[in-house]
Length: 288
Image (cartoon, rainbow, N blue to C red; front, side):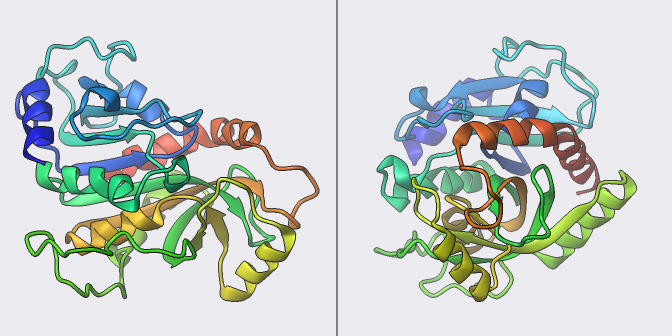
């Protein structure tokens, strides 16, 4: 951790973020729009790289107030120097995440959350692309996560506990903070964005679910299904961060719709939703 933080602080001139955002499949454009300093995961000591299409694999630092920076996606601005003087919130964005199905241990998958915590963030916004288990949800809908089901068969907190980060048996009764959920709904209403609210269930992937599994998940109370987010949310809550989760519904899960599932469809639907997604995230940041 010391090596990781030292490298990042050198690259960013000790930039102190207050808000962290993890951008899921196809949702990374926000980090291109706002970018003061960008660091590839592959350059950061002890950071795993993302290998999935739609995940650029960069840690992006920016000052955001809703007005886009004029720099290119390469983030050429000097370390620690904002590309615009108008931005007001210090934000760090993970432009893509690391997944369990890529062959990493959950300790590796959730290591970035601990890094963001040590960099100083207080609030973490988790986003993802998800399949609709709830038949009323449609592609390009946005769903605010009110709770989750860990169906991955393991837990990122297994192993020796780090008392500096959290307690051995952390409470998980309100991972997704009600005040942040209400804030997100109010922001969506202000922007005239129709948002859903529901329960996200996480599976390991990388194969998509069978129709029988989706019927089972619906019986368990899930509204959307994906292959991420839950380990990060568990660790973030454990570390004392305030968590907000937003799913971009990119497809109807197996048995809900008639089409065959593909990652290309996920990216396509995320592109359709990206403008309202970016608008909502920017409005939430402005009101935090």
